[in-house]
Image (cartoon, rainbow over all chains, first blue to last red; front, side):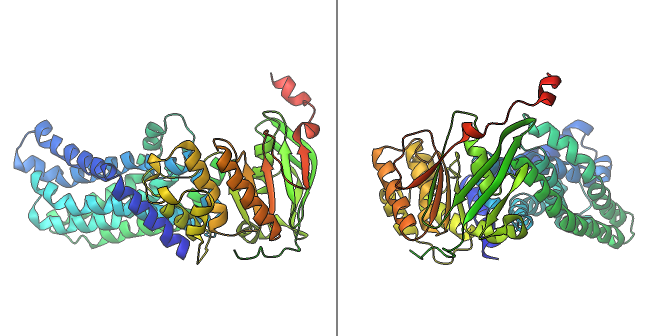
Length: 221
Length: 223
């Protein structure tokens, strides 16, 4: 367990010291959401109707933007060799890196989402459901993203490739995340959507570390 | 320093062959590294020095042949074997934002070492004065010293070093030579890939060019 916590602590420390990275992702998220009132016009009716979709899509794009730093630096500086040779099973080390990634992207995105929801005229009643959905769904973004990030190690321009690989995988998260808010707005229970969202995250939690570790071993060859 | 464990066990490579992509780099290579022993790998560029070290570190899988630790195939218990080895490759595995002290502590934690000898490692490689600077302020030679200080911070019986003297000044080379001598005196083993003149007492020398595989017909046909 010590290697797991050590790796988690180091990645968090690196994120804090290179604070720009977290700020960049959050800044992108805020700007992407704020573009919509300008693009589709400020009518509260129209904006409020698509608000959940706006926030969720912006969150997906912000998550994609942050994936390249998940393994690329350790791959480039030789640290990945040492992580593979460490006392921790590679799957667990991968999970530590994913956890650090979520704590520095998914969690902050979730925390500022209520402010942005107000900007795009989301019914205040639906804001808790939006936040709960993001809290349950954003770990899946980091987990699934890790698979794509590990598969594209060594590619010449990984950024675009990562987006192409991972955005289709994010579809279920988007569907159930926005579905939960939609259900609340129409007076139904958001329960079922949130449970399905949780199922997606749990499935990703079980599969992503295995797939990512396999891809990383391949990348070392 | 904790005495190197399982000093009776030997690292043996039997008829190793390594393939990188389509190219067979070397074949039919036997090597042996006993307690207190040293192995110097030399050869021209591209002859497979680094590949052999990565193979000994289980970072590459041999195309054929077998690696044995204490008579047991390494593949049977890779985790146990990995705990016995230190690999220092071309790259230094340092983060610009972390200090040398944090870097050593982190890598020792990743090895599961409860009480790393960080201060001793920093002193052995002359890094005491820069121990709390961020690594981005260090020169290439100092980062190299830091990578080598990992060897001392967390003891392990097998050291696999790839061009360890690259970027080191004369004083750094002396630090490394002293660390290797102490390691071997305690029963440790070391394998070094280098094309510099390195003076190691009683070292076995493997010239990788001697094991170069003849060009294969298949590859020729492809082109």
